[in-house]
Image (cartoon, rainbow, N blue to C red; front, side, top):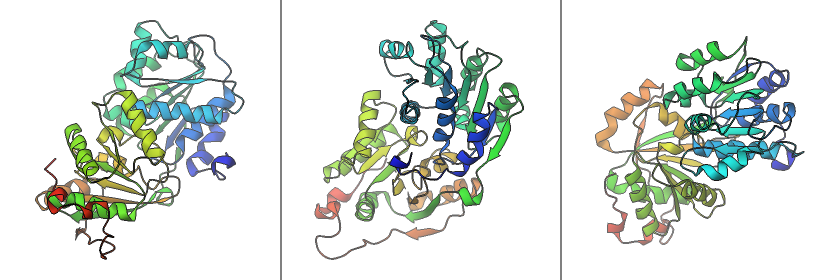
Length: 376
């Protein structure tokens, strides 16, 4: 772990790993980016043994494809002895390669819909699962996955250990706890001390001035994630930014899995400085050191503001979240933010950091009409 720059456990890791290693059912409440994956990943690789073909001993349920792939990669990194093998299964990809990997995997990381399909096809046997993990349980509830989650958990042996991690433990998540966990040990790492160090800025910026503001922010930050409300809006914004020499990667529901993975890889490796995405990327993308998140459009659900913003300020780093608000949206943004406990103080769009000729950033070098974005 020290080779990866990880020398001290996070609060959620300190709280949950000992109980997980002791075989207890665990409920962990913690904000995004708090180190939950390593917490349950260490338990999986420490307690499980190699499985029989197509009969995994470990199961992790997650809400999105991207999170499935990233959790799988993290487990493989933690398994230094290579005694286990993890594989990710999710919709939007062919069955053949996933079935071949399931045959030799001890840990399956899955989205509920695809796993339910595999069960109905009798391609996987869950009767040997010893440890089950529900990651981002609140997000799975929000996305309507709970019926599938319940059907899957009902197939597990009665003696299994269940670890549940979520930003909230009430409502539908509470129902999962009561039904599928036995005397769970509860841990709450969501204290103010554990909250990410994020500065939230709300700027009044007309829609035709947003591209210029992105240019200014890119002068200040090495990389930016830009969230848009719609798939077509994401594509349009990316095209406009790339027309002004900004390399972008794009993620949304109409992109194939290969395109989404390539976009993440380009952004992680720095080949793209801007990741433009819909709320499909608001949960489940784990990229450390993203310095800035921009809300091009306010989210439809105010709770998604928190999930979007959680892409920055991770692993103890400081982050900045900038909401570009058209003056016509002012009242609705104030109302929505108040519903999640955020007091909005608007500022006018900031001027460029530097004003000498040639130092306004890539966009300032273009003709003025290139700076005007169509409404998304």
